[in-house]
Image 1: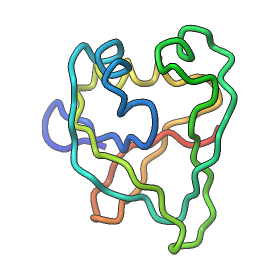
Image 2: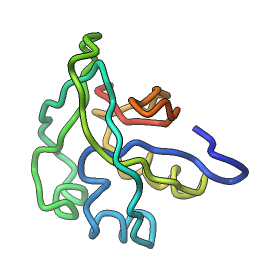
Image 3: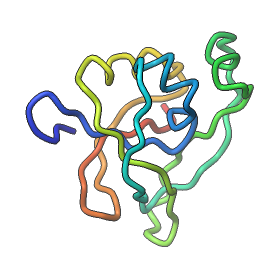
Image 4: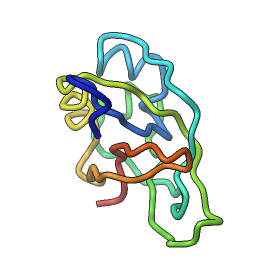
Length: 116
């Protein structure tokens, strides 16, 4: 979600935190703030896209599934992106994912990629 003019907030819990993935996807490193997403759990999905698997070094990536239980939490980082960088993240994420808006444990509203 927007965090001021020209800034999009993205909750990253997996490979979008990896420096090589960030450099390739955004052209820069983004540290971000630690946060958590309640009501979801982390699972793993096989990645068939060779470019994405090669970039991350993993043939399975983490993926979020909603549980609805606030005791379930996924930890990650809140990244501040330009709209163009958010578009680049959309391109990086394979069809197993879709981007939705969520409210994080901190109260921050952010985009996140969950199971499609």
